[in-house]
Image (cartoon, rainbow over all chains, first blue to last red):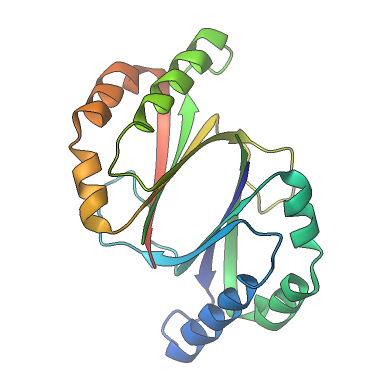
Length: 99
Length: 99
């Protein structure tokens, strides 16, 4: 099992167009069959000092193994997402975990 | 859908006993039936500037909704985990997402 978690901070979080464009881009990733399970989210209403709710979108992708993740990284749909959407975000934070 | 992601940094990462104790504690959470899917992980070997691989353990819990997450937070097994294991970690970082 390989869990790839990404948090995105928009360059213009005040822009609803940018929110919609990034969400649409993230949704395209779900068609990549190398992904076992995909979750696209936005910050929940939970508030505690240990909770970071400052991001705009989250992406949690579960893969069978690192090999499947590596195929995803080079998949044309993923590369198109980065090419089309990278201008929308100011920062991404990634955590990769194996279990 | 509600995704609760937690990263743990051990107080004594050099202690294999502490690694084993935290892993064992995290595994107990999987028996909480309010959780739809649970993943316990450790940092993958991926290395890029945007990847944080400094943590010791990750926990990704998927719930049907925030209500299920709220039940989990007060579940006796979760409370016992915190009581038994909180001394093991120096820091936790949580991200909660709804989708």
